[in-house]
Amino acid sequence: MSGMYGNNSIWQDIKLQFHHGGMVVKLIMVNLAVFLAVKILYVVSFLVNFPEVYTRILAELKVPAALGSLLYQPWSLFSYMFLHEGFIHILFNMLWLYWIGRILVDFVGDRKILPLYIFGGLAGALGFILFYNIFPAFETQRQAAAMLGASAGVMAIVVGTATLVPTYPLRLIFLGDVQLKWIAAVAVLLDSIMLVGYGNSGGRIAHLFGALFGYVFIKNLQNGNDWSLGFNKLVDRLTGSLEKKPRPGPKMAYKNESKMRTQRRAAEPVYTEDKQARLDSILDKISASGYDSLSQEEKEFLFKASKED
Image (cartoon, rainbow, N blue to C red; front, side, top):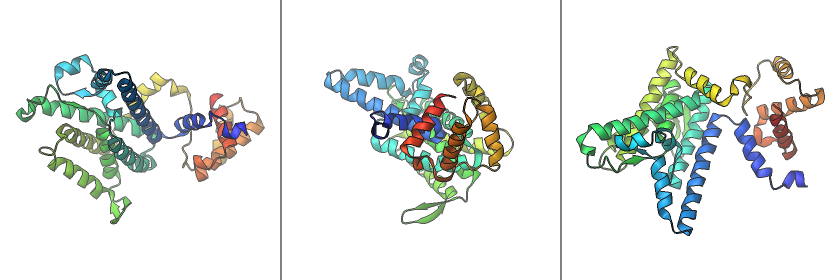
């Protein structure tokens, strides 16, 4: 009973999803965790009657348009792209990321997602800063302007995917099947015509620069220039994951199952034959039906096995 309904089962499921889920799942979980932390901070600051604490911390995490402010908070170039205040804002960003990101993974693999998201977010931030410091129309707003949200990184993934597989169909309510290129084109067109006069000009600029980066990234990839290689090498060094073998995603299909099992056994000599057979069976089940098809006991076994890596 305690194994199935223990107090830590939810936390174990979250850790398992993060550990074994792909990069799209990881990005969504990080964004949601930051969103919850921001909301908890807001509630606490309200209860103790120090709302300026919440305001100050958020100001440090948003990317400012003013170069003088940016000089003192360079981390905001990265922190802003994981930061959301409004529920609708994060909901639509994460839905776009989930729907389109999974399509991109199917075609180029999991290790292109994070570089595209981060570089797209940086492109959006730099475009926002550039416009607000060059064009006179934004001069009066520059000192107070600041931006947050994952939209630029998400737009890089959306437009990048549409560039790679433009005729990929998505089924939309009331419209039926619509090719991905038209969905991306409408998103870019709306951001372009709403750049001024509709509010959130900084966000629209970031969307367009993120979209532009997604297009250029995929075009270079198609020409044999993979901009993600250096980024992934750096991440591998920082996380120590260079020594770890890649884990299969929930929908991965093995072309040579016996060879994969032989390689797994050679790489993981700590398992007994029975344990290895059990692990193979669970991984096969994930491959066929997804992680959610596992029983609680199978999830716990997989969690324990992952900690022995």
